[in-house]
Image (cartoon, rainbow, N blue to C red; front, side):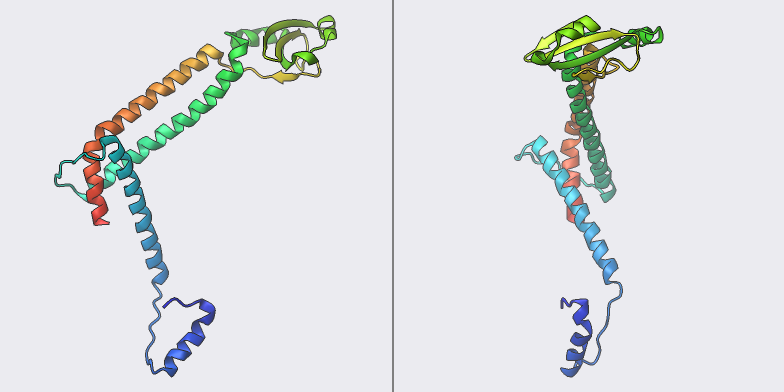
Length: 220
């Protein structure tokens, strides 16, 4: 029976009136529910692994039905999950790098350390962007401005100044990444290579792991 706790006492009284002499309250019910929940979550993990490996091997693939142990199945499940987690981390890092590539592309192959050296000597290079229509000619008169690029309706420029804070103008300051676009592209390529290697490991383990996970699911 499913009985809400507020109705529990009245429910017991009704049972007594119907002639039920003994009612056993199972205190370990909560623990059993937790165990069942863990079992269901474990089965879901296995099914997700099977679905992934089946996609790699193909729906018509018939794995070798070799003798396996639960320990082997669990080991392969954990290895698959670890590989997937690493791939997901690399994908997230790649997304961040791609945004930085897009943001830094207009500034070219700058030398960040050289800019730091100039700052140490009291020469500061401040970068800005604004809509070209909002660029003011007086900035060229009041500051040492250098045109970097115009992309669409946006203008990108630098102001060389002796003040660390930089001039306050009606334009958006740009903070350079320590890596220029070429270095960022190298990082993205490195992430792509690492992702490819991890995917290759999953493909290699798929035929054996698929059967092991199917056998593990049967024992859950």
